[in-house]
Length: 221
Length: 331
Image (cartoon, rainbow over all chains, first blue to last red):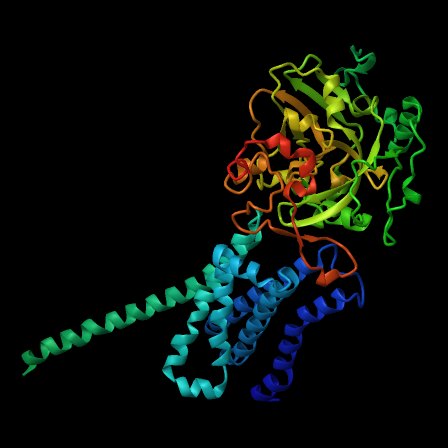
């Protein structure tokens, strides 16, 4: 099999199946099929598990660029859209489980939460910001938006920061796990910041040479 | 050598001065049976195995207690199952996830156990748990439990009024508050090695709250001795307050003049106060306290939230304690 076929018939189906396993686990356990149920508070467990899975997929999506640059596995890019869409899928389910299982569609209470409680405000914003990214994830939209596509999709950095912050803020006291997410995100965003800085350095290094070139030009004449 | 005190005509041995060999420790089953005989078996209590409230799945385990049911102080709500009550716990000394305390509870050794009484009282000292419990007849009370995290349960506790215990130690007029302290021992409570909270856990009640007939010293649940994860062997329960006031695994009770600084109020003073009365009007800074999710029930996933009641439904009994107080300020 060539690379194309391996992605189409092996890697993508594998990632797809792995991506569906958290929701399959919740549904099977939640309805008491196979093994133990979800414990004393299934609604909260579901809410938290879906939220954390969304964060995991966001982190994986953000790992694609550094990993392919560091290892040279450039074709990893082909998995990025699926990972990003899984992040959107689980963030949406997390939001839905908040609306349904946690709040039971009590919209007065939901409205109060979104406007009065900062951790819910930022979580809500993160989910909303994922929508345009999901909508513009098709090849057609990529072509249509051209260079603006990349600018738009840089929103994912803000979304990831909001997501981790949302997690950190809702924990009562033991913030060790949210801090692990924060550390991973810091590395992923830090890598990009360093790359961008290096790029600017190279550009800046080039600029004076061309200037001095033009400055010396008259002397040569 | 042991010193003997006489309190209300009963003798208490000062435990600190006696050496206990492991072979001399009485297993809880025998210990509680002996206690029944000594107490004169007040009434024909119900034994856990035939408990009328028992849910079908994973029934109660552990040594059975002898007690009477106190219907006057019990709510009519359907109690949670033994499984829910003993597998969904906040006991950070045994782990911060709700399932951790059950998994890690094996390291806590509730016997032998000593409790120190100190501060502004006429009778002080360190006593064995047996001596602490000896004069008290146990009763079962089904109380609502409302966690500050906005979930709730209904629990059949077994215990005795804290007020009865306090009277034995004759607090002086300077005793305005009662302060409770949890065991500090990272070998038994391994998460005390992590600096999640300021250990040992400390809680307190105003003297009138402590003397209130609803305030219970708990030694059991569902007719059985308390499992480690529920705060064995001795914990506090004042059902009109958020669950974190119900300090677990108590080793010290101090009578003090000044309001104690309780652990959660030290950790996050703008989120948790000293009083911690259940109040649907006063939100936690990060979430609403207007409603709660009742754990358990047949609807599982889809259990709707229920309205939280002022003082957790005990307003008739306790609201007068706080007359004239601004409950937004003293949250």
